[in-house]
Length: 272
Image (cartoon, rainbow, N blue to C red; front, top):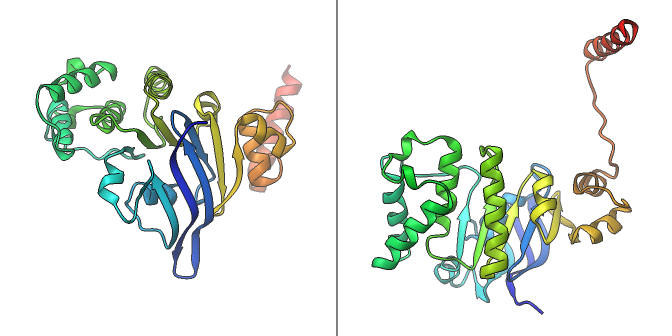
């Protein structure tokens, strides 16, 4: 039985009289990709910020590698890397300078750091841009550099919020392969939030679905299909059934647009 990398117990985040996260509990095992899914406003980012120590919970407990994130936040943060949906970089630095800067934050130094920086630039396809100013990078390159920076200190847990935003198909494939390799070869745990459900279906070992602040489903794809009574449905269909009660999407268009659509369909059929 694999050890638990993240343990969340009765976690709640309250803003005034509003509960953004409502008494949720789950675990993430060592060496697995755990998908954390939900519609906008479900409480995903709030939960991730509490796990990474950017927000304090109103109540409940979060353990990372057995360390309490509230009582000993620095020790917990040393075990994890965080990749936000919007990368924040010091754009007047070069890519290489930025990675050395991040290494310094973790009090890393020496030849091993230089070797690690070169390794990460190679892995993420940035070697030829190592001496380029970050301000000249495309969004996708900045996203890859952000991911590289999260791995400098060889974390045991990576928390990732929307990793595929701004990446081209080649970059997206690279990241998916890196995630799987980190889990399978190094035993790293990845806590992944994404709206790209095809990616979640491909790379996640287990998935938790958050809806209106509550954890409404948890398990692998087969277990979620049983929960949704969805047969061999895709994760997208399962997600819609669980969060909306139906896999059908109703589009409510203004009358003039609906009429225009019908006229176009009628015209196309007549011409054919």
